[in-house]
Image (cartoon, rainbow, N blue to C red; front, side, top):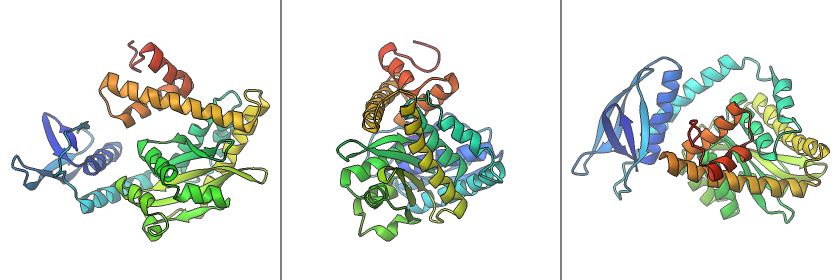
Length: 333
């Protein structure tokens, strides 16, 4: 359950509904337009009802955790419609910003291949490019350790992290199949694979994700992991998206080699183990920051990512400061 905080009012609703409203309010503000929506909720007696919200550039909407309730409002049709409206704006924005998605690719890859970057930061740049320059909504990277076990190394949000962790926990899903076969996995609508990935499909639907595309990360003839993207639509990815994702999967591999050549770590196994340790530090920092500043875990994660970039620092370095120096990311300690 979550509260939608709107001016001086608080509206209790379901998690998926609140997240969809928040995402839609952001794109409306970014596009300087307004829309009136009717948010599913419940009255004081627990009876289902709706509350009208006018969203727009001058509207401030936030979410807060609310007490769990067995009668949590759910409305899949409302969430799907709001997601459709959000994606419409997102696609238009991407088309305007990237008339040719390959413009600036060389500069972006140069940043990914910076040999001074920490493994975690190099992988984070890869997935950020995935979302920024393709129709993917979320992205993540898993890499195999020396025993062949996969680990989540990078994710664009808690939602993508949940989708990846669900695959590793249930031993099913696109990134697993991609790693095992060394082949591209392209599934515009995971519902078509419900018999193969029942639990993964359930997790995807719970996170309002529809499609997935996984590209192997290779080194010589070996598959060492996968770059997995997720979408809130079932339209799949066009040829430009696919080529871009393939290039970024190769860039992830190249970044690892470039770092090793720079003398940071001697073997791929060392790099993966180092990235796993760094990821644990980031997870701890997310929890500490969320508790310290009374914010959601995903908001804490995004603060870490944006804070590291804006300050020119590594994710691991900033996460360590959050844990050991009580840094709040707002200039106070």
